[in-house]
Amino acid sequence: MYQSSICFLPCRDLTQTTSFYTQTVGLEVAEQMPGCVIFDTGRGYWGFCAYGDDRPMATGVVLSLNCADNAAVDAEYRRLMAGNAAIVQNPPAMYAVFPVYSFFITDPNGYLVEFQKIQK
Image (cartoon, rainbow, N blue to C red; front, side, top):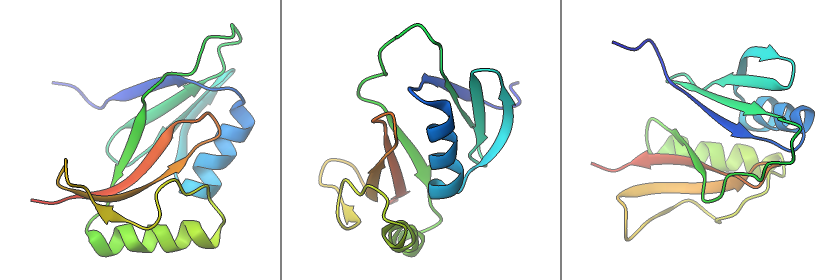
């Protein structure tokens, strides 16, 4: 029915956002156009646009990347710690409310980026 999905979010600084998602997180740019960049997450796309109209950043946003297993979550945590990423939750942990093993970092726009493995 659909080929893929994409979520667009406003960003403050497109250059800084692009650097964060390519260099820190490790995503590839799928498409870039004036004022907007789209990243390929492997299962969908995240687009960030510098709209230029001072619109507020979206609140309560969590962008989650699903890892293969808990060991992959741990490996991402070690990689990001070595690169001095802004770690919000230290270290990866299981959540009482959700069956998820994860940790979070903060992107340049204040959005939370979660590296997780959903437990079944």
